[in-house]
Structures are given as C-alpha cells and as structure tokens.
Length: 192
Image (cartoon, rainbow, N blue to C red; front, side, top):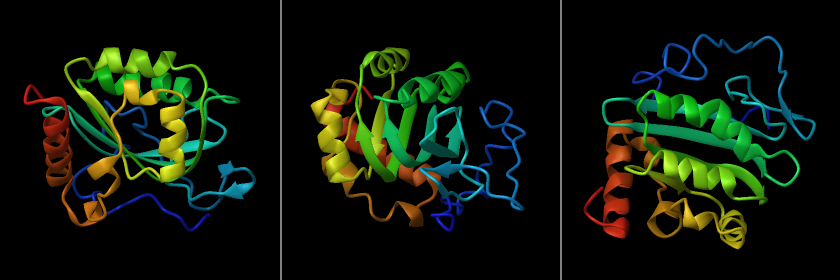
C-alpha cells in the first residue's frame, strides 16, 4: 500500500501545499519516514491526513474562480467508529467552502469500504453548497451500495456515468471538472 501514490500529473496546475486557502498549506510530506497507515499498512507520505484514523485524502486541484475542488481519497471511510465525515467536513470541506469552493469532486477508486452512521454532516455539507454540488466519482460498487443504504444519495451524486470516468487521468483538471459539471447538469437541471 505504501507504493500507492496520489495522482500527481496535475501538480503543474495546482499544489495544495502552496495554496494559502488550502487546509494543507505549508504541509510538506516527509519522504524519509512513512508515518501514516491504514490498519497497519503504511501509506505514501503524499496522502494528507485530516484527523481520521482510516481515511486520507489528497487535494489534487482547487479553482476558486470556478468554485471547484477535486480530492482523491484513500482508505476505509468509517463513519460508524471514527466519524470520518465529521473530520473531513470540519478539517477540509469547511476551509474550502470559506474560500469559495461550492463544487466538490471526490475520487473514490481507493476507498476500500464504507461504514455509515448519521447523515447530519452530509446534510450540513449539502446545505453549505446549496448553489453547487458534491459528486463522488469512481467509487466501487459495494461502496456505493453502502452509501445508498445510509441515504447519502440524498446529499451526494454518484453512480452511472460518474462511476465510468476511466480516462480522467489523461484530462486536464479544467476539462475533468467541466465533464463532471456537464454530467450533473444533465441529471440535476440546467441551473447548474
């Protein structure tokens, strides 16, 4: 698991460490020692911790003019034991919302499991971005099944074309965000 790096080809467009609005501003990974782990398996130092014991992220891109943020996720999303959504909401999302982000894209290819709990923080996040949206992209089928079981689909859009974005790594962040925007405009209406 320590060889699994966050996507890095957009580094020419954006660096969360160099962005003063980022919750990870000024944070430099330590490549000499691997400190973070998911259930005893060390993970690459480029994954950014936000208070969860089992879930990590990498802020791949933020555009404050357009209001987009793209986060790649890694680990087990466990709201039951660790209240991961609270940590994500308080320590990452709220900071980005305060800086003008209202469209969130979370890449979930490396989310291994989801264990649900209360949906209060999802509802709060949804209300915070009332003029925007939250999209979960490329989450595994068993994870989206669990998300639906806990009614997270009331607040977050996923499934269908959003689970079939296999070429996103070859796009620029601007093209990728525009594609997600177009998919959601078809689903949610032209007001987006």
